[in-house]
Image (cartoon, rainbow, N blue to C red; front, side, top):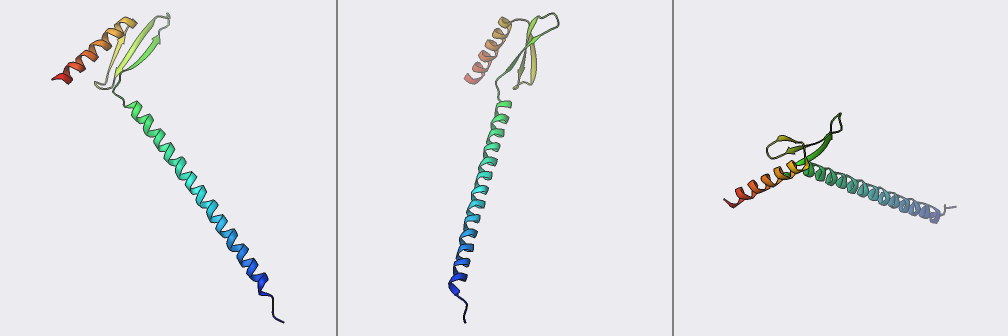
Amino acid sequence: MQPLHSDNTVTKSSKLTLGQSDRTIFQTSLNWEFLVKQLKGLGQALVRFSEFSQEPKITRRRDRQDQLSFEIYDPITEQHYYFDSRQEVLVWLDQVRYQSSDQNNY
C-alpha cells in the first residue's frame, strides 16, 4: 500500500502558509521598530534644535528674601545677564533686537 500523499501535501502547505505568516508578522514588527526609532531620532533632533536656538533664554529667580530677579542667557554671545526688574529685561531685549536688525541692514 502506498501512503496517501494528500496528507503530506496538506501538511506541507499548512507549514508553508504558517511560515509566510510568521515572516509577515516579523517584517511588520521590524517596520514598526524602524518607525519608532525614526520618530525618536526626530524628537531628539527637535530637542537639539530648540536647545541651540539663537533666542535668548530668560529665567525668573527668587532669592531668600523672595525678591524677583531675571537671568538672561544669550546663546549668540554665550553671555549671562542679570536684571532686577521685568522692565530692565524688556529694555535689554529691545536693545539686542535693535542692534541685530541694524547689523542686518549693513
